[in-house]
Image (cartoon, rainbow, N blue to C red; front, top):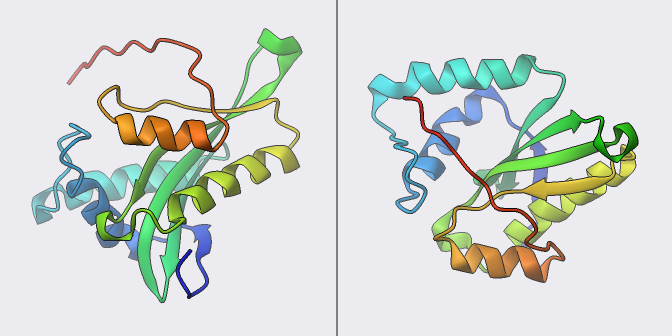
Length: 155
């Protein structure tokens, strides 16, 4: 872990440029993210939807006053598991030059502790099939591959 203390907090609208840069730098993700200023309103709209939701939270991981990572959580309740709740982790990113310093582990452990404190039955996430390093990382943290995911891109 870096010598400075990592702060994990809810993301603020003023973090948006840094968060966009994190996603735009991810060539492997294939989401078409960009830091082109013409796309800013799309990100701002999404930020405001997340911010207004009682079931979603967007986080920023800050080190020395700079955003070095992000993730989003969603709470979902299902009839399966006798009506249990789960935390879904999405959009996990750490700045490329900061990887391997414990930031990602701190973010995921934050999610796990949050889910435990809320009495959730499980924490789950998906990872792009090409991200083999990420898969090893999640397995080191105690996650087990369990399902095969399917997607249909609509636009």
